[in-house]
Every structure is written in structure tokens, then in C-alpha cells.
Image (tube, rainbow, N blue to C red; front, side):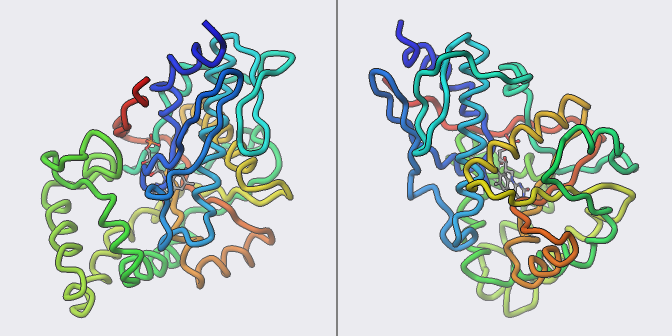
Amino acid sequence: MTWVEQLRAHEAVFRRAPSAHNTQPWQLEYHADEVAVTVDPARSLPDSDPTGRDLDLGIGAFVETCLIVSAGLGLAVTAVPGPRLVPAAKVYSTPFTIADVEARRVARGRYAPGPLDPAVLAELGPGLAHVPARELVRDLAVADRWMFGTPAVALELRDWLRLDPRHPRYHLDGLTDRALVLSRFEARFLATALHAYPVTRRLGLATLLATSGRSLLRYDGSVLVLLADGTDRVTAGRRLLRTWLALARHGLAVHPLSQLLDCPQTAARLTDRIGGRPLAVFRVGRPLAEPIRSARLPAQVH
Ligand SMILES: Cc1cc2nc3c(=O)[nH]c(=O)nc-3n(C[C@H](O)[C@H](O)[C@H](O)COP(=O)(O)O)c2cc1C
């Protein structure tokens, strides 16, 4: 078996990589001695992610996941711009394993109170800013209202929600009621409100929907911000994935809150607050309940 064939046999593992709205935007082209990673345009989010920030970060996270899996298989592979996976002189050096990739998941439920241990933050290295969760309570409400009140963004979210287990794509992609930790009632309410969206918006229900996230940051917790560091966004996505896996090694889960960057008003405030260019924002902590394993598309048939 060539290295490409060996890696390909583990496609289901590296497909565990995270992506915004769980769109899984990557496409793989397997060649004799390289694997090209391209983007499926139908799986991008032109309205919620117009600058392609989350798309690039997701592709970076995917590439890092592929490299960790390659290393776990003992394959000497590296990533080059494209991005492409190509042969390397030695196995990629990483502290992370295939088991870490398999176990990784975001957790959107409640976290135990208590800020992030400064020693853990120091271990993560530069390029991250810490903000106490409570300090972002109001901004998250503003960002949520913006998200549910901006038709193109709300409707794009609707396309990727799978709020009923009978949804035909429930086990394939998108965000399920269980992943979003919604009760049956909350899931039905959200589905109905988004189904009748133009009317809902006029009735001001967007505000009501947005308030559901109010309590999310009202505790003594931590939010981390990934800062741009002069590299491209795909490279930053690789750093993001390593950060999430490093936190997981400490039993800490993450919950991205990208709306804080998507909403122009809260993005500007966050930029001022941290004095750098934010690329990703996520809550960090010890989840009180085990997060669920999210859906994935099956590996490409070959
Ligand atoms: C760049 C990026 C942005 C994301 N933004 C959000 C977000 O704003 N809110 C959220 O709940 N999850 C967000 N996520 C998490 C994805 O929805 C999640 O990775 C996906 O649903 C797959 O679930 P899993 O990570 O548990 O496997 C983001 C993930 C990435 C990579």
C-alpha cells in the first residue's frame, strides 16, 4: 500500500475535524504521491462567513487533523500551500494522537464555574487572549440579536440545522438539536420560528430567540480569543486545532462563539479590548455533561 492509500483508508478518522455549522467543506483529491484538499463551494457559508474566515480556519483544522492521523500511522507527510499533503523527510512531530482526534468534540452545554488555570493558558503559548466570560455577556446578546435579525445569516443557519431526528441529513452534517443541547420544546420553537422567518423577524421574535443564549456567559468562566499572528488563516486554523486538542488533554472543552466576530459591532469592540486581530472566539471549561459526537459524511467511495 502506498502512503496515500494508507491515509485514505483512515479518511473516516480525519473527517472528525471541526468546521463551522459542521458543513465539512473539504474535498479530497487523492493522487499517486499527494493529496489535494479543496473546498466544496456548496459547503461554504457565503452569507454568514463572507470573508471566508471560518472556511480557512476549518480547512486549516482539517489539514492539522490529517497530519496528526498521518503521524499516528507512522507516515512521513507534510502540508504545503494549496493546501496539499505531500511526502516529507520525517514523520510530522506532534504530541497528539489518533485517539485525540477521535475524542475531540465541542461542548455547548454548561461548564463548571472557575476561570482557566493561568498555567494552562501559559502552556498554550502566544497568540491567545483571555477574556472573563461575564465581560462578554452583553456583547453576546448583541451578536445573537444581529445573527437572528439578519435574514441572510439566519436563513443560512436554518439550512444547516437538523432539529428533528427524522431530518434526512440528521446523521450526515449540520447542527443537530442534540449538538446544540436543545430540549424538544426549544428545538421545536427554533424550527418553527426559523420556518416562518420573515414573519418571526417582524414580530421581534429574533430578540426572543437571541435571549436564549444570554445565560451562556453569565458565570465565572473563560473565553479565549485566537489572534492573527501574521501567518495565513489556514495556518491559523492548524493552530486553532492544536489549541483545542491541548485544552482537551486537560479535560477542558471548547464552545466557539463566532457570532461575536461576525457581528460588526461586537467584532470592533473585541478588537479594541484585546488589542489584536481576533480570528476565533471560544468559551473554555469543564463541561458538566458529556458532549455528543457530531454527525459526519461518510468517507468518499473509492
Ligand atoms: C472556524 C470554526 C467556527 C465555528 N463557529 C462556531 C460557532 O460560532 N458556534 C458553535 O456553536 N460552533 C462553532 N463551531 C463548531 C462547529 O459547529 C463544530 O466543529 C461542528 O459542528 C462539528 O462538531 P464537533 O466539533 O463536535 O465534531 C465552529 C468550528 C470552527 C472550525
